[in-house]
Amino acid sequence: MAKRGFPMGMGGNIGNLMKQAQKIQQDMAKAQEELAEKTVEATVGGGAVTVVATGHKEIKEIRISKDAVDPDDVETLEDLVLAAVNEALRQADELAKNVMGGITGAFGNLPGLF
Image (cartoon, rainbow, N blue to C red; front, top):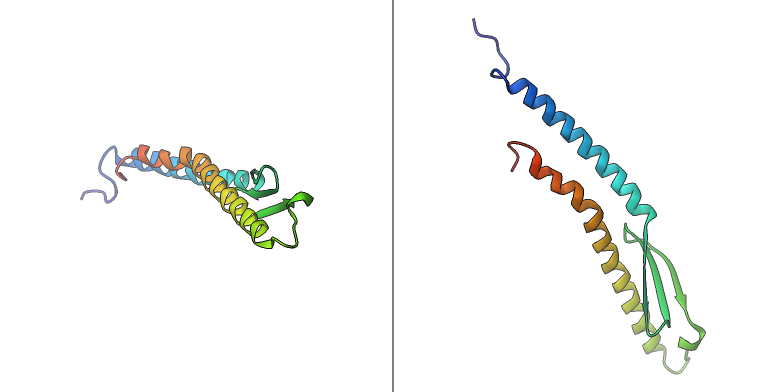
């Protein structure tokens, strides 16, 4: 009677596959922690508005220069804040892509998945 299970030689490959998957999972958790700690900073209007965001797209700080505050032109300040926030979020996306890219690229090394 034949043994049930993996064909000869497959058991070792499955073990290696599981080890690689566990390493990727650990690397992903570490990368997520790194993104929570790293920040990006966007400044617009010649320093009028600065926004700091984490790699998780959490806005941590908004700094507005006193010179940018004009009660007669609130719309310009609103536009500057909007531009700075959008740029900070774009940079956070780029940071996440760079940090996670090395890990997700490892999926291509797993046999039989891609």
